[in-house]
Image (tube, rainbow over all chains, first blue to last red; front, side):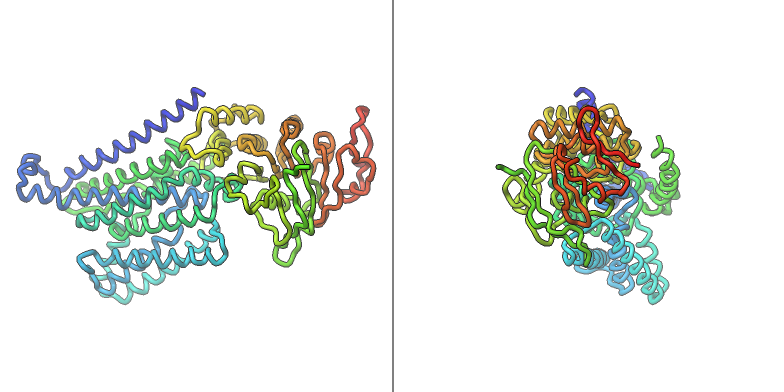
Length: 335
Length: 255
């Protein structure tokens, strides 16, 4: 019994550590940037330091924390649903749909609609279309299975990528540049309105996903394994797919398709903390948010005054990491 | 007589191919049934239907006197557990985490209680896999995995255990141990139904043999009567002869 208690103590410590990292990132990272910010100026609400901090750096950090958390949580979820440690929000076609929607909006030249970035509407519309296609298809056959989701996702991603190239060809030079910039994924300052809508979505949908943690454990082993232990497989899978998709769409609508955070963080947490989703999911959310916010902060100062987008910064770390994981796989399985 | 499990007139098609044809039998608590047949006879399909994993196109399955479909998934899982032929997961669950999943239908608690942990440890000790509890399931050998899956089934504490080839990958000592555990479970009032290819293991440990050929239940007899009508042997091979051991139990020889 002692070892079990020790295991749950370790999980609790890791959870506390992830929450602490998240909030430390929220408090400390806004102070990092191209120009120094004076604390006394901020306390006296003096321009420009106060405005830079509150309107640019804080919104940016919060966006990175929320988006990074949402993408990591969704990554862990999709890896459980597909029983594949290499699944990401990309794999299911949601990112493809969202990108196509956002690119269509940029190519059409709608920059803002009712004061909210037009890409948000485009990305949401795109991912909703993909989602209804996949879930609609699964309603038809009355089940939603890992392999059918995976195949549909791959097909949708290819179609969307092709459409994006066609759209890019039709748009002029400057719009082409905006499209390319959006597709690499970057954290830009945003309005507090957009942030509150996003945080509402993330808290609500993240909660829906977290509550089913025990079911994700069983589904990650197998659909029949879960079904014969009392999980309502189709209902739970459908809920996960819908909640995960909306959360991903909401996040990448504001940031562009930032990929690797949903791959690296779940992997690290699974290896270093636990594969148990009751611990994995919250840890992935908090560590993922902190990692993306850190990448964004580093990207701000590394080649200042120019910036490296957070998506590129993550890819620089995530690409080699992925290769490393693949190389590590075989010896680990034999160990 | 109260039947734990009763199927009647069960038929199952996969596309145009009929896999199970009007299968009917009843089983009671305390029985240890061996489900036998050659490859492709429909054994696993029948077991899946009994576990509620597949739905037969016609016929009924009754679990503890009530139609299987009227139980909620959770209530059914408290009564029927299923050991699959294989489990493939890319994700690094430990052996203990896998066995703990057997407790899923019994509690709403976020983490397992002391009592759950006690049962998990007992099940793993019985299946000889407690020493592997911290190991990642995918790094275990075939036989070690099979023992972990058996422990997960025991931890589920259902009144009916359905086991799809529980002795595959096990060495001879472990095969005997696995079937002894199942016999103990039956003696304690559970119903065990195991698919197996080992006829002697079935004859020495099970109380009853049900034989499927091309989706039809052709034979259904108690293990002690195995030598009376020997027509069932030819379904497996023309080279089998049945005899008795010095202790008097039926035993199969092959030439």
